[in-house]
Length: 268
Image 1: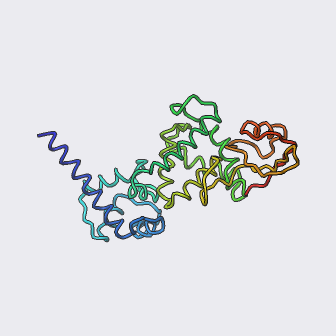
Image 2: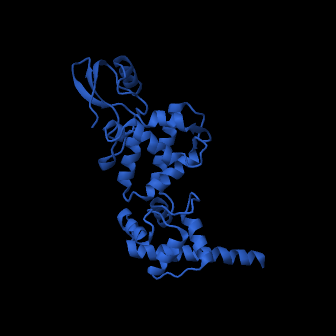
Image 3: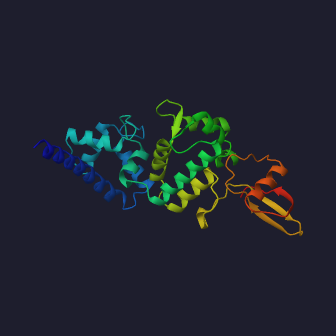
């Protein structure tokens, strides 16, 4: 009987979550775009914090015709409030509505982590990165810093606010994946998510809108006198001031040979 009671409670919890998700998706549209979900959250957000408390969630759902008990609100908070802060953010709201990340997006996140593992000479996905090491390599090569949209100091402050939620000054694979699950929830199109990941972690490849544009492009002059613009593959952590000899060595390692001269191309 206890087992049946437990199953019944689980079914009830799943029921209120699905009921609320269905109603929000009905209001926001099938794809639950960022703007539509933000609009709904703001209409429920009485104190203007851009987050929802349990009380705001309950009252907001009443406005949309969804009646919930106190225990059901607690269930909803547990489901949506992933970081246990007591408030639901836009990213948490979106992630709760959209569910798990697709295999394609998860694979891109894993590629980014593996890039970090290789660059930091770590042993494997069970290892962790210190926030200081992560920031030192990620921030100077981030597109916003390179494009002059943010200073290194501004990017570092934002970085620490986003990543150091539990105060342990470290990032492991699960935390890394969890962060990008939230980011993924706010990005509707797979092509754009791929572009974000490829450019942030300098992952070569992609096609069309998702093709990498952050990697170094070099003008290579061959021994024959012919010239070609060549992408430096997976150049995460490579300084833009890299010397010519080192640049040629890196190009040779990726199979570009018979090089007479090379100059740094502009970022596209």
